[in-house]
Length: 408
Ligand code: PLP
Image (cartoon, rainbow, N blue to C red; front, top):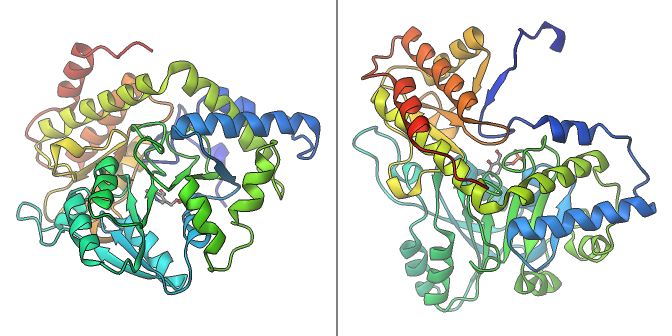
């Protein structure tokens, strides 16, 4: 049995790319007494969080909020819009794109998985897992689908397993250039409220997200932002759905309620998070994450290690994947850093198991928490016998000192 009382002194460094560290203000909000979810006070809370989430998704259209993890919201996106046997074009960017595809298969859909072919010479890793979605491959495939069998295109905006982002506006342009009616569904579970994301402007039909990353909440709530086209498709979609069905949720949450018991206390936390985020403004928050990511990359570059993201234009503002030298077990290093410095880093997932670790730079962070994290990583790398080209800590200190944060 794990006893939290045995935790060492000081704060644990939860530097995984979600769940992210939760600010005290949000923890205090969550600890308020639970109220009647059918009572008058609840309606005001419900309406506030739905309206706030529309601002975060940058949409004027409905947002469905689920008491579920992100995986539930993935399922909701598919079952509300598709019918058994439907063809779906998905794109392999990493482990999470692969899991979404596996879910589509389990639901009786026919996913086709596009990927950048080949292996990277530098690392021997699949090129698809070091790069973002190539919109031209999507356009080419859709142009060949002249009888419009493909019902939806599904992509991941911020691939949490690699630290690579994808240009969603370019995917929309590719679908339009091919004059194809497929829906565009996007997973921004780890991108929302950290990386710029515009549901309406980018013509996304269903956006999937979750609470435990940029929104700085514990895990447990997730979202579908919808377009009028997605809502219209839902009327004809035949996959079975009950708990996930948008119609009742959208109708009831317009007045601040849900068809079932929502996560009342997590919604208090969401209300607080929205105040914090919207007070600061999304542009300042996006700039803050980008700057953190640049500081962390300055450290990784100084160590002489490659980042998982091979495309300089697509580095995630939320996390950095660090590839360890051949023969060095990245998970062994992570265990060492956890044991010695009470530091949690993200593990290499799927095809990257043992080859890389991930540094999260999101949630309740600042320059000094990131400096401490980088110090833990540098000490761990040295203890693990990794030969470093130089000091990443010194490089990141220079970067943060020389690069003022943008004012809110
Ligand atoms: N998609 C992405 C990009 C993720 O990062 C995650 C979780 O980390 C998921 C999907 C799955 O979400 P959850 O673990 O909340 O069910």
